[in-house]
Length: 202
Image 1 (cartoon, one colour):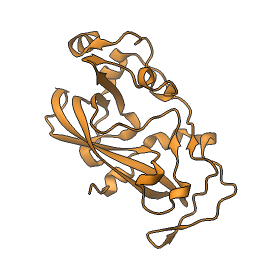
Image 2 (cartoon, helix red, strand yellow):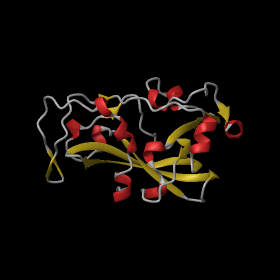
Image 3 (cartoon, one colour):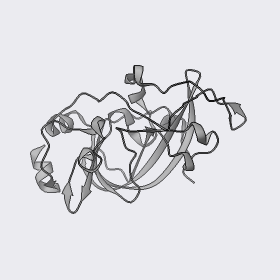
Image 4 (cartoon, one colour):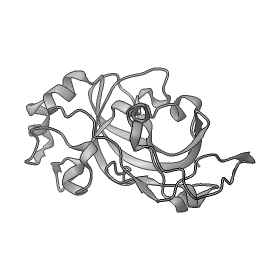
């Protein structure tokens, strides 16, 4: 079973921008997570977060230290305590099949805010997903663009990670596959391209 390392569980830099989009604390009593008090309380199973600043593909490429083609192969949902609250996170491990930019690596892993309740241990009724930031899909191939951070497990800062799923031989935005994925929208990229054309556009 894939287990998060200390670096990976700290990798959700997106949380710093969530602000008023944090989940409601009304109505549900705390439960136990690994014998500790679970102080995160949510009334609904899904929240939304403010969209990241939109950028074009060339801007994302130029700002990224790591650009790879990779398959999402394994996931592990877990709880992490941050600031006295428990947050559900999902770590995804990616098998790199092609390095486009950055050091040659075989694997990357990153954690996303949110977890499917049936996949997490403890406090399942408190777990939630982020409606406009879908979790990666295991078995899916992606173009991944990310900042390099040697202090993070897998070398990837998940708060900067952008995923472009490859479906039917074309590179698409997550918003094209998930209508609510506003956080993943990229400015100016509306027509899916082949991988070579996508890279040429960057």
